[in-house]
Length: 201
Image 1 (tube, rainbow, N blue to C red):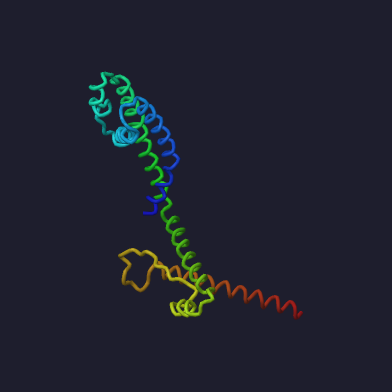
Image 2: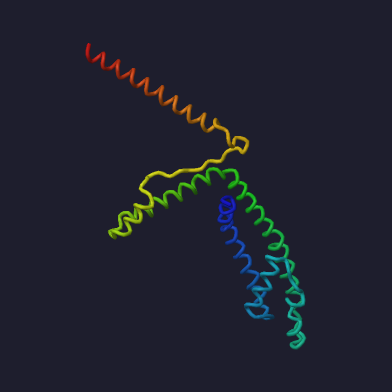
């Protein structure tokens, strides 16, 4: 989910270019005076984004039969230019931009998860701290009753094959850290004893 949410904002600059391109063709088609502004926009939207169009609808054959004007050639020019440039080129570029952004998000999915989890934890403690500083006594009692601990437990993913085992890689990592801390304490104690011996001499 996070890679998808990361990929969507990356398409905003491209959509700005697409909107400018779309407005240009909309202005060109609306200047023909065949349809109203809203109808012209919907026709261009269907042509540009959905590749769905009706040539007779774009020419507005009902109005042309009454007025006698023929806008067949200008409408065909708009149809060909916008169909090639926007329906084919722009939309395929959009798919490529989305795919590339999603791939980058997928490669950094663990970092995105950790950042999102940190943001949620910060948001949680910020709200609790704000409620704790509220002068209202009833609010303070409610916040304190929910839990006064200033730490959060996290769940980490494990291989299903290790479920139910007493010893796991996580336990081994904890033991390694414990051994390193014990060794560090021993070295600090030895250094402290040497310093004390030198001072006594």
